[in-house]
Image (cartoon, rainbow, N blue to C red):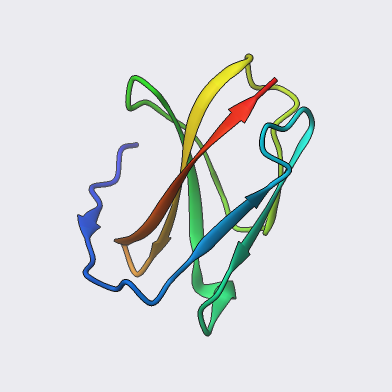
Length: 87
C-alpha cells in the first residue's frame, strides 16, 4: 500500500538522527510537542518506501548499505525529513 504525503510549511519541527552513519540502530530526536503522534518512513534513494515505524529507535540492521531518507509524518502531512547512511 502506498500512502500519499502532502508537504507542510511547519518549520518549527527539527529532527536529529544519531548515530549517522549507523550500523544497527537509528535514534530519532524531534523538537516538537506530541512527538508520539509521528510516523516515520524510511525511503531509499529511488523513492521506494522501505518501512514504516512509530518508535523513536529504528532497527536498520536489515537494510543494505547505502543512503536513505527518513520522513517524519504527522496527520499524513510531511513535516520534516533527513538523510542518513547505513554502513
